[in-house]
Image (cartoon, rainbow, N blue to C red; front, side, top):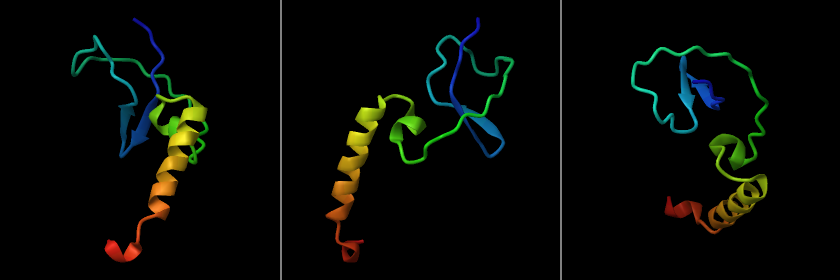
Amino acid sequence: MVRLVRAIYENGVFRPLEALDGLLDRSAVRLRVEEVAVDSGRLSDFAGKWKPEEADEIGALIEAEFEQVDPREW
C-alpha cells in the first residue's frame, strides 16, 4: 500500500498529521522525505485539515479573543 502522508519531524521522530488507518504499531515502512515550505502564519499548514480561508477566519477569531484578555488576569 502506498499513500502520501504529511508529517512533522520533531525531536528525531516523524509525527503524522493524520490517522494512519490500517497500519499496525511497529510496522516497517519506507519514507521518502520531501521538505515543504510552511507558512507559519496559517493554521491550515499546521493542522492540514482546513481550507486556507477557514484557517484564516479561525486565526482571526483567536486573535480577536486574545486581544480581549487582560494580561493582569494571567
